[in-house]
Length: 317
Ligand code: NAD
Image 1 (cartoon, rainbow, N blue to C red):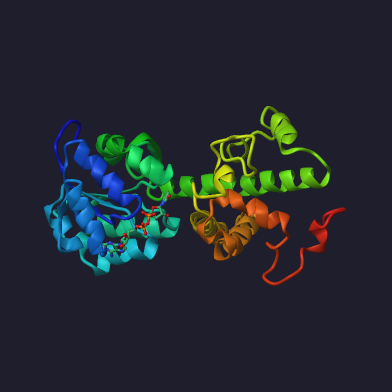
Image 2 (cartoon, rainbow, N blue to C red):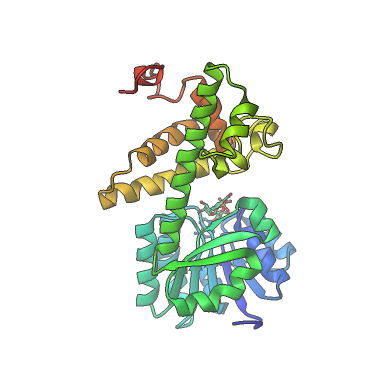
């Protein structure tokens, strides 16, 4: 596929898919797109894509079909019930870039292969800013041959693509990484709140931890208090950034996999609970680092409950 002009089918032209499709157009590919929302379809046409009347029409015309949808149920419904696989030419490469359950990604892959197609899961990190600037990182699951074939397309939409293993491995890497991120943002936030109660300035804790063993992305790039990192969302009243509901979603996917695999991941499960509560309340429109404020106020315990006695101070239970 290197240097070839391909016809790319793109289904799901939302916050991420819209700019990703536009970057494929900029790279010289023919893009035929579809979304349930007519205004998004019109915006894609404005960016140089051809608007299709249905997802099946996209698949019938495409060499490669990329999907960027909200959740696993949308991908599976589209692949199977809405006829995306049935409409495609045999051997078409399906690349699903949505963030979905690992089990759903494997089911989607198997359905594609059973229909005579080829498939990759290729979720992304980098957010809307990365989608617009073509600086996304892709985490890819599937066969080496298909990964190599997809690389030039992924390069048109991102800065890095990592082949993580077989089917579902891209989704697995995504949720493991974001479980680290969710837990570490809570850890950094709790440390700042504890520091406040001990009379320690934000800057002093930052200066120590950012060059010591507490160093992590949640602290040094997305610092949850205003001041130490001027570009972090905390300095603009926690405007996203990486929105809390997306973190809650990713931790929910990680929690599903933790439970399904019988894995012991107490912090990952607790982080999923805390982010679910935060995203359903104050965090609905905030960057995920805003969880610091609700942790500080003690409102992120069980719904309607007082702060847990084991987190009020003293020795944890
Ligand atoms: P979005 O809601 O803006 O876009 C999804 C689009 O899919 C919508 O426009 C919707 O109309 C369309 N859609 C749903 N079902 C469809 C169907 N059957 N046929 C055609 N179109 C359909 O979501 P987004 O923010 O673009 O996120 C997409 C995926 O990327 C999600 O899985 C999300 O978790 C992941 N992701 C998002 C971000 C981010 O910052 N937004 C970052 C990394 C990963």
